Length: 564
Image 1 (tube, rainbow, N blue to C red):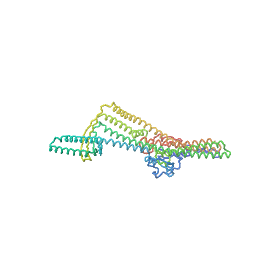
Image 2: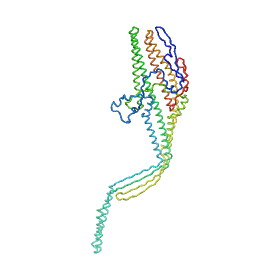
Image 3: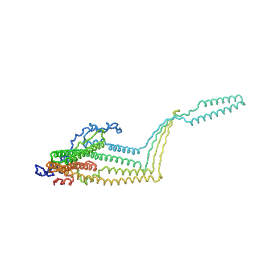
Image 4: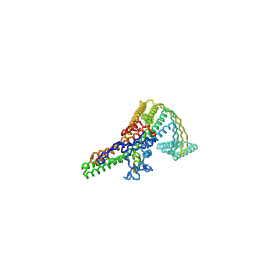
């Protein structure tokens, strides 16, 4: 590939007014030789680009990091006021580094991946039995027990008193020996009666109970493996989602950085237009004072200057907006401010043909893999739902140990069991739910096919933009040179009295427009290049000479000159 640089004397036959005579300078074209180093091609910057004085990039990015206390909100204006010490110029690579470190959307994707891995661990835990242990200490004073104790006591007292009365009734007819025996029996019953009244049992009990139980699902009709496989697919989908988020973040940050670069250059272009308008106004005022100009020309120059000043004000506003947009994307310290440290230049060359690009994009896009994972999840969920209608077999074993703390007595017991359950009828709910998941898998397949078409369109759209912008860079470089010379000639004609202020105003407008077009062509080229890298799924190696599309290199861009 060959780059051409147009000098100020090229693309235009410069007409100079020298003492009222016309002299024609023939165009001279300056052609740069073919570059052998691919890096030098990617470093190419069109000549005479109106770059602002770039600041040196920041050496320490840590002060730009946000406060780790994410739930705090500012309470005073000073918390969000830009700190001059945090007004830093950064390169594109530094912006990408800050984005990977601080971007909130990327952090959310990372947390979602960790969440999916935790869900997978939960699903795998179903392959092991569940063990539970329980221990309790209880002190019970039951009202029912109190009533039962009292009723039992009253019944015992009544029975003993009845026996005593019966024996006392027999005493008068007994001989002394029998009377002595009965009397002794009565005394024994009276002692028992007193014992019952004095030794009422307590209604309070202190019990310690402990148990251990083991449960295991022996057969789940395929639910357990389906659940594990669905969780594994969810982890893969989350990994691809994180990869997609990282790639999209790179594209968004790069575009925001290009927006900032473009806004900076537009400020410079607008500033140059204001300077030109001020120079024109000074010339027309001098001509008016010398009697060679009119008040009308002065008024026209003042209007032109006012218009250019308004364009400068709008460009400065867009510059501030672009800088804040990048700061928001990078989730920076609220007191930080950014500017671009990289100059506007061609970011590189695309090494692949359009067909190779389409194939690589459809092979490498993580979104396609994510859709396949979603399809796999739906299929496993269908299997999981169908398994719930099948038989479920489980076994359990438990052991218990109890101690009465009031009357130290202990005991041990155990239980073994198995259970089989089978849903016989659920009104068709399981079948309908399984059908939903089957249709979800079909939807993922259709989305896969649709996204393949979208990938092709995205590649073609940006590839064509890359080609056209590549041509436009050279064309607009030539146009800028022509516009600069046209403005110079218009001013010379005005000073010589054979031109008009309208010619100068038109020339200034054309110069501003061509400079903006040249800047837009470079920005569009870089945007298309980074978009192709995003759509392919990874950054391609820089192209060597001759590997770019032939239509972009074999083009007669200016003055019939062909590069090849």
